[in-house]
Length: 424
Image (cartoon, rainbow, N blue to C red):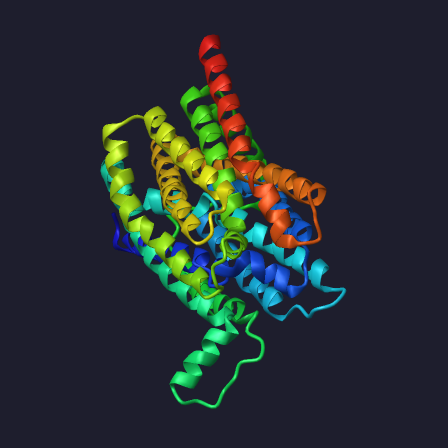
């Protein structure tokens, strides 16, 4: 590995950490509601975000393979700065929802631009002969750094959101200061981290010369999309891997999107959100060696059976919404989230052709966000149908359907896998 490319690995890890560890995550659901949105509007915003990614995911991945993966990562970081600025300074009132829709569109564009491009750039920065063993080490290192960063972001973000908690700290320190409104403080903190994220992206180095002419790049991107789609459809193991990952990821992400609402439902105070988010982030330290050991000793089928069992147990426990003690569901769901990400990255990078790597990885994002968007729409429709006028009661009624929905989706995936094997 050349010295310039060697620097891509720590920059890739730094980019992922700064791009993903957002301070508003521990209060995401209640933040939007406290800004003045309804549960249905919040769910629709998530659908807009997912649809944007679906529309741009594969084209951005194909362009990354042609015009340069670094360019797409830099674009993602720049879009993050703009989307966070809109999120931070959107005024309340009639423009709130439209501007938050714009925020979700820009956020989706940023996610699509980074998805696949950063990972393919880092993977191809490794010495070709050593990639099979070096990449799991990079993923384990990434997972540990992300866990530490999420730990800090969850604690600080939740504390910054809780005006009463900040007031008690100020009183303890002998300060005559009472915060009035801290709803957007976690957003301001995330905007502050978006700027160094952009500088990190600018420091990346391209692994190979990009295609110069934009018209040629567009033609090549179309060719790459078709080639990658054909390869996925022909490679049965990759197709089944994407289906299994889609089902698990969609249900986990939907629950985590409403995690702060769940904490409120099980009667936990707001300041605990950060502690729980941090505890969940620390699961990454346990998940990293576990996932690395599993990919070395077991095959994809056994590994995703483990994931499916963990998700079903977690969602069933969440449906019970046991006051206070219901927090235990974060353990199986957190482990399932981390190991799913590890498994997908390990297998797809190992199996995908180098020339199509970012494009193939972008199909992962496409599939996952299609699943998440479809599930989000169903959840929004169900929430509207079960609406009681009390957001907490509505959320409780809707939450009960998640484990049954996951079981049905997993069963249909198994039927699809059986039918696919029978045709071969």
